Amino acid sequence: MTESEIKALNWMRHIRNDTLLLNEESVETLEKQFGSIETFIRNEINVNAQIIERSLTELDEYRSIGTVSECREAVEKKKEKKPIEEKGVYASGQSDYVCPSCGDSVIILDPECQAYKLRYCASCGQHLDWTDTP
View 1 (tube, rainbow, N blue to C red):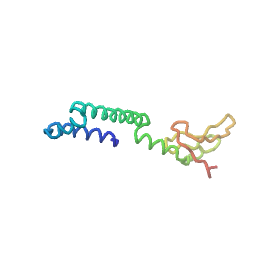
View 2: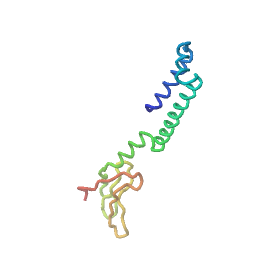
View 3: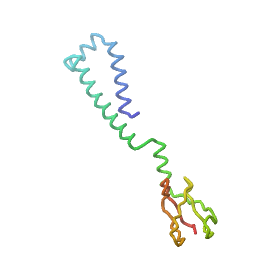
View 4: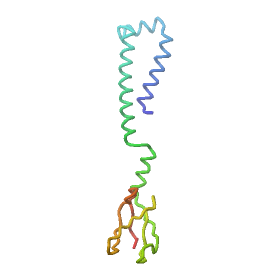
């Protein structure tokens, strides 16, 4: 919950509790400052409605980004990881390499068995580190 959401909720609790506790002195003070209690309450409602509206907009923006676990997963996939070698998989005796995250092949063979190493896994998007890999 954001600071503005907490402020709005506390204000609502405060108004609910204070409305029950208004005495003549506090009514007179409010009337001097705002002209009437109704003007004070209307003003407070408008201010806090704006805070709530901004908070809901902010919440929608956060939700559009994704959940915390989705964000963590995306950050992890940006970190380079070494592909896992599976030796002698092809008829030519050539090794295959698989993604460390999802296990799918990250080598593309052309018709002449020329191997092309992918920088990112085509299945899950994991960034791959091919340094020191034959």
